[in-house]
Image: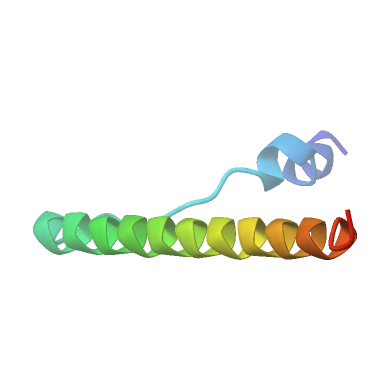
Length: 64
């Protein structure tokens, strides 16, 4: 019974196996590309949020 409990424990399920990196330069380039994409997405989301907030407050205080 103990092996079954160990196989299905939450800590065992969170461990992910991965394949080894064969081309480190390509891996680093891919990581850099993903980092830039995430940065652009975060900037875009921030600009959208600020625009929505500005538009909302300009409508709320239109007649003030």
